[in-house]
Length: 155
Length: 116
Image 1 (cartoon, rainbow over the protein chains, first blue to last red):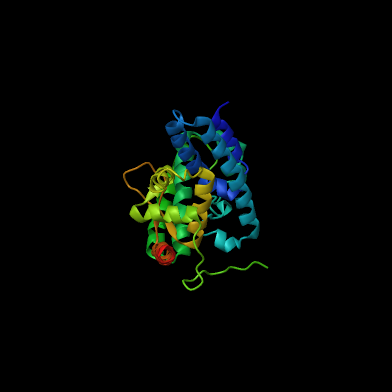
Image 2 (cartoon, rainbow over the protein chains, first blue to last red; image 1 turned 90 degrees about the horizontal axis):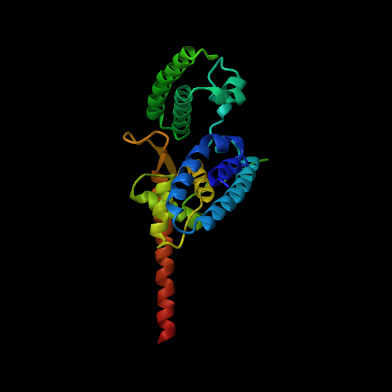
């Protein structure tokens, strides 16, 4: 059984906004830890990680249901607000999104990251940094748009 | 109705162990997820092996509270998001370490007194 695949599947238990923000980071950290643990206590490590995911997902759902959305937005900006204008929900999040070339996906992830950083900076009243991120985001979004055009994808 | 409780220095609760370890680890330098796991294991003398589920849940809450913030590393892959302490986070860590120091001092004094 592939531990990484099981881990990826269990990440699906988390709320969507949490997954959008942290799933890739969690998977990266898990893979690095897995490499280190292959020699010692592998099975115990994997079991502890999977149990951690179950418990963590439960806590995150409770947090999502009980938290003030404005407070939660400080750590998890609403991805619906980060969808570029004119790009349909399906094109941005739907199953066909998995057909998008890696280059385009990376460019769009970079836009998302910059938006998250900008929102975070604004929520902490760091407007100078927010402006920097806003400028970077504008350039990154244009780059992503041109890539979509190059690959004949809906813009 | 949802309520937001603002934590202040006066009514600060003791930090949970994962939070204390994360803040202590970040007090040295900004770190990303796996570097935090490794450093926390080192800090705790191998006693604590934090799972990724626990680590990232705690990171989300710390981001929400404004105790840590994303840190942009220029010379590494952008996929690896690092985090660093904010001024508020540093203050909270100092308060917690002061509290522990005070408790340790009081506990040791009582132990010594009971030995006499």
